[in-house]
Length: 288
Image 1 (tube, one colour):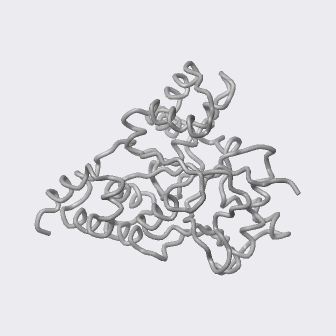
Image 2 (cartoon, rainbow, N blue to C red; image 1 turned 30 degrees about the vertical axis):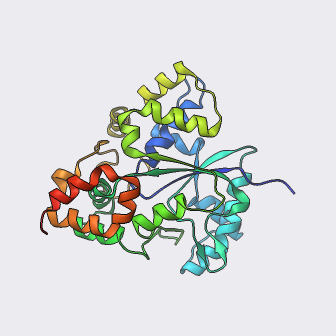
């Protein structure tokens, strides 16, 4: 039987830089002059919510009603995704590494390794609010909800849960070869961040290709593409997918009470992954 451990998961909590990373990787591994725009990323990476794979796995168009309908088909859909390319390939996911009943959401039998992109929750909150068309408190409610699930109209789902549970599920997954990239580090020094990733992937770095790709997939370049051609993955009603591409916007977007709530909800994970933010967020929150 063919070894289906071909998937390199590109995983993150929503609004953590997954699409930006996909754009970089898709363009880096293309021949010079054949880069992919933001609406062609699926030619390089796929996602675990692709309707066509669920249709094929189901034997007819998939249109579920319950989480049980979805989880019954997901393992076969993932095997089809893994088998869709002959070698290792990236697959985007926002799911946690958990079981639903006896079924692994991230199947070990199709998994080679994972890249996990993490972003501080203070900056996720405003971006998530824009993405979901929610007010800030409602977005924070979603980020702190252990049962939070995203589902498309055909009930192909993503089990998201709380931000800290999401982080722990990936960074603590036993036996999973994993590389963690912080969104903030990608912003501060993208070349250093991707060189570290390529070291994990055991991929040699082409300096000229690195420079070309960093320029072609800068946040400003992606914003320009979106203005000129739109972006097919942008949710209906959302004005702009590539909105800021910066760290620290929470200082203008969140109230002291909201900062205090996020800090209290996620403190142990923040102590592990964002210790440099502890003092500032405590002071910003004040006595709230």
